[in-house]
Length: 107
Length: 117
Image (cartoon, rainbow over all chains, first blue to last red; front, side, top):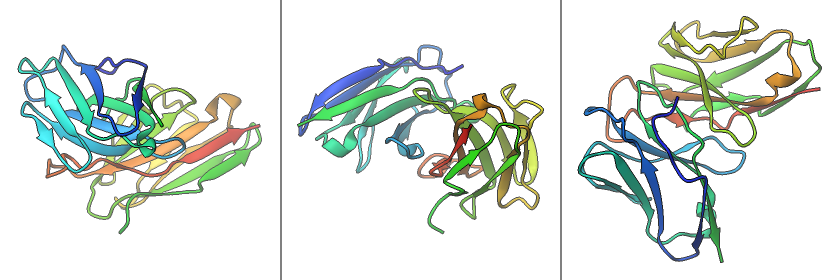
């Protein structure tokens, strides 16, 4: 079973920041948090990953709490093309997906 | 090498027939994974290979399912005597065996959508 819990759905206005939360209270000290997204009818796409420090790349930022029990994925300026299901995953030797958060970006 | 390739993209088959899917991973990736995804659910892990060795199989992988990676490159997933419950998207992914700049570099293909009628 997945080690993460996420809200099933969220809405965001186009151009605004989308903040997607994830709880992973049972994470172990050396387990990484990965974020993937899946646009309809496509395979999951890598976004970002981290251990304990905040991370940023060209797609998103990842904020991990100091106790590592939760994290937030931030899409700084959401566009309509960011509408997708977003998965937060604690890597357990392989990717185990939960239900994810369905993000709808609205005009 | 542009990514993970899966063939075919779509397959419609009659119940009871056998089907085989192919996955070509990223060439430098030594790990290969198969997942199944049904509508509204996240991908479910089925099995994975390191090179040609099949190292783990999920309990979801019934006796009718078999996966191979004979030369440690491409892989095939065969489903025998298909049932309507096998209708799903079958996803393949590949990864490095070590953590690099993008983590283990898990990369997914676009999937094969199977419909059993």
